[in-house]
Amino acid sequence: MSTEVIETDAVIVGAGPVGLFQVFELGLLEIKAHIIDSLAYPGGQCIELYPDKPIYDIPAVPVCTGKELTDNLLKQIEPFGATFHLGQEVSELARRGDGRFDIATAKGTRFISKTVFIAGGVGSFQPRLLKVEGLERFDGSQLHYRVRNPGQFAGKNLVIVGGGDSALDWALNFAQEGPNKAESVILIHRRDGFRAAPASVARMRELCEAYEMQFVVGQVTGFDESDGRLSALKVTGSDGVTRVMPLDMLLVFFGLSPKLGPIAEWGLGLERKQIIVDTEKFETNIPGVFAVGDINTYPGKKKLILSGFHEAALAAFGAAPYVFPEKRILLQYTTTSPKLHKVLGVESPVFD
Image 1 (tube, rainbow, N blue to C red):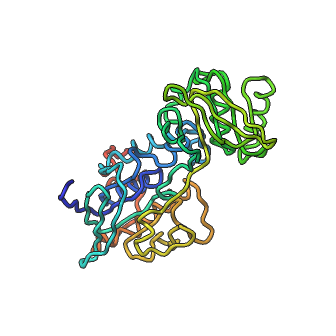
Image 2 (tube, helix red, strand yellow):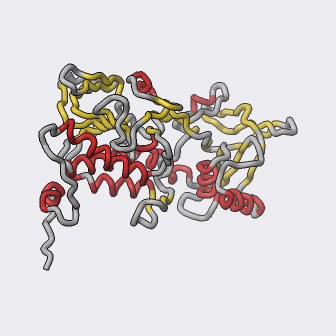
Image 3 (cartoon, rainbow, N blue to C red):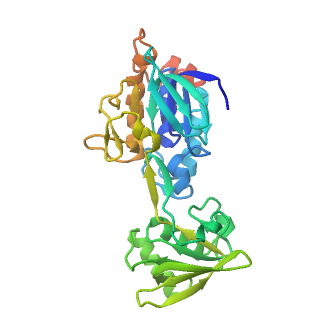
């Protein structure tokens, strides 16, 4: 455990798209940042939930996946040399006598920072579990709540449980022709209605009619195992009949349970587990602490990535007086400012 204390201008809690863009906006103002995330990799929900799923509402980018968006943001912030502290949860935040903040992670990394930016998305999120006694033994081997590597399911007999977009998307992905096609796909949901895109539901029913996959209404009530491996799932239908479904892999998509975790104990103004901010600087009730992205709330709030990008820009300008109290902060444009070109490490264009 390190005893070194890191002194910095800004600490960003959360390395999702908005947290990453916060690095960029701070960097343009020459504010150095350290970024902390409980996940072992940057990208937040984009990487955790839909790394291969298309996103269509990023300005000037007609379509990109969650992974592509993350990779592009990481490339964009390279000039600013932000330091990442991944796989760590911030456990302490306290105001110091000199106006700065003491910050600590559960792993013992400590910071003294002039400003703090909370970009924690929906908080530290955990998948909702399929509660069948003894099933947890197979977690990570045959039981999966996320798909990190679709290729590992190719050619396998899959049972997928859930009724939302993730369950339908992955069922379609594995049932249709392609590099990840499974040997068989059975989708299980407790009722015949879905919380997914109607087009996905329609496509799923088409594949069922073509015998490319199966859909079963019922509840998972047990399982069978053979030689220490999960071999089948027991599903009880509304007719009271329990059916046995052989499988190689079980995928469960019940959504995520957001948890604010230690953030809830920091004295921030909260409303329905979200942090209240103003709309001028996206500052919280604690001066010098800002909240951007899905974790904040204000009148008219829309949980969109592009809204978070806007919030990050104004929050950076709001933080500048805490970092440079004697400096007048001017709005400059990356297109024409030689100073920003120097900060970004690019050559200033010559205009005739």
